[in-house]
Length: 265
Image (cartoon, rainbow, N blue to C red; front, side, top):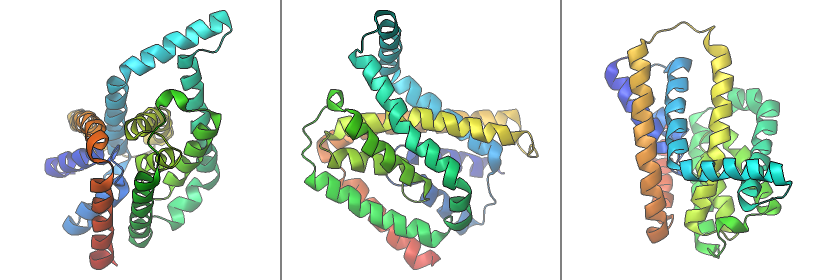
């Protein structure tokens, strides 16, 4: 992989991991237009590590509070708000784990086509617009309970289908359930931490069997670039949605879907 390809794909991964626009759709475009080969598992591990470090650092205050709250809850045997949030995030992660275990191979075999990605990009873009337009935007993060966490977790399982966008589908579900835009994004991004960590563990298991085509420096650069772009993207997104809502991302998804249909189908 050339340095230009490595940096461009790391930037794309960092930008699209947390925006509701589908990273898989964006990784298809440069590969199709420029004839780039698959980036390989080592690269995927590197950029996912970068995005994981970015979201952990951005939400370090939340994670610190949840850690302290969990320790206090265990000691006092009482449920506090921080422990409650931690448990809800674990609970909402389970559907993606279960569905991933059951259907990952089937989805990988039958759903990684441009036609599927174009369709899901358009359909879930429309659903995001509906959720943003019809949601009450009144509930804060503290109002998330078992029911809301369950629905968001089930929605997250749909992100196994390429083109859906993990952040997009979880934010859509959260908005439909009445969460404020900023709180919907916060819950979605916090929920990404165990998901990305789990994906890293699964990828690392198969990494030893794959030929190493990258130097340590290349992987380090990919990690740093993806991490920096992911951190800036999270900060930008949280500020933007509270003022403009999801419409810019809805329009972008619809445009991207049309481009995929017109030029790649």
